Length: 233
Length: 136
Image (cartoon, rainbow over all chains, first blue to last red; front, top):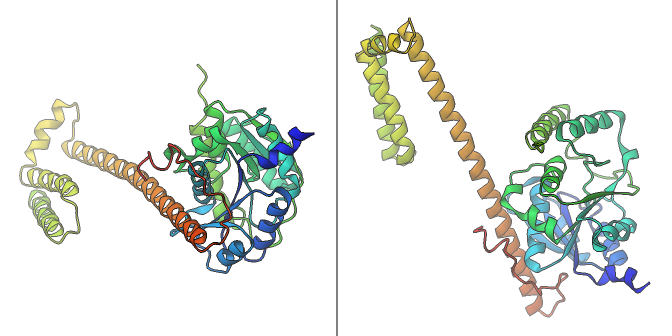
């Protein structure tokens, strides 16, 4: 099974956006490094707590943003950095411990084998009823077919990384629908990989914490998804 | 009465714009636009018959409606173009912030290497066409 062990030696990097994640960041970084052995890039989105120091101590390289750019801005920074460093594959995951390092290998598999350009760790069970309604609406507006469009647990190959490093992707605010539509419209192949996710232990979801934010998010994402729909000729 | 008031508004607006440019609060490029707006106010204020002359030629029976419609349309176009410019500027700022952060990380990695510490990522980078080539 030497081919299977290959995935560890590929030029892979793990990108973790973090904003005030001192509670979990060290554990997440250590766990990823222990399980995969990959270098970890933590993109610090102007945390005011001890996130940077803890991430560094745990063995991550920290990219410190001087202005808060939000989750997607932070991830894009990580992907741009990974491109410049010459990495061929990048995995993105949350800093709050929701995504389990144990699934990393499984998530890398289709991309490293060349079966897909992007794999998305999907956990459909995690959604509340309201969130599922939101997903259905967003999928209808954008024409996306992914199971879990909001999952940030993904693996990108070099082509996807370069595409997402582009200026075109810079104006996106969230990493979900806009990013997926961009990838799909460029003709990249996306696959769902079933994973389990842990309940969030600290912090709150950046999106689902107030009704006003949810309303803005839905309006924003519906308009974005609809405007970027592929036009059939 | 109408003519005097809007004429004076135009003159005050023009003066304000010149003061703003003088004090570097307004870029000359945008000042030009606002001076043109002020000029339109002055012309329409002191010579309201201009609009009454123009309206019937454009099929509008009541002059002031034409003035308002034109004004509103131009205003909407201006706001839209300024939002387009703002979006572009936002993207520029984001890319600059990202670039600075990447350079800082690079600097830290070099410092770590000099200090004999093992940097966490292999700095065997080959510059890609993204990052350097795209300007910021």
